[in-house]
View 1: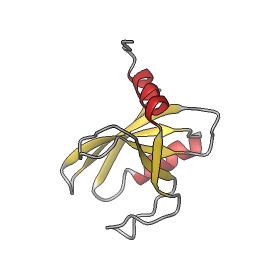
View 2 (view 1 turned 180 degrees about the vertical axis):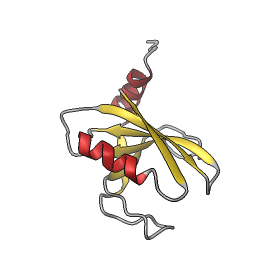
View 3 (view 1 turned 60 degrees about the horizontal axis):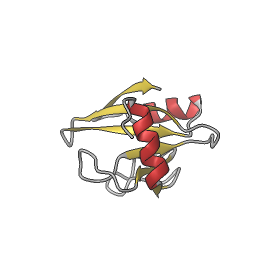
Length: 113
């Protein structure tokens, strides 16, 4: 079925494919040990993003909600851009993810659902 709503398409991708959490909350980035993931971080299975891996997902603390928005990022170190899906996130989780995506070489903006 054709969907014309951006977030509905993302809903379907998660529903059909699921997500994999590859970095648990409070774990360090493998190449940048000073960068700590303050939320679970992973990707939507079976998808592809700008960097060739799956579409990135931050998973928050509220299993009663689905996708609440995205963060669009520009990375001046890698010289690329991506989206980060905000899934099951509270308002506090959203602000935490946004803060993580606005450090040093990362610059992100929030797009709410």
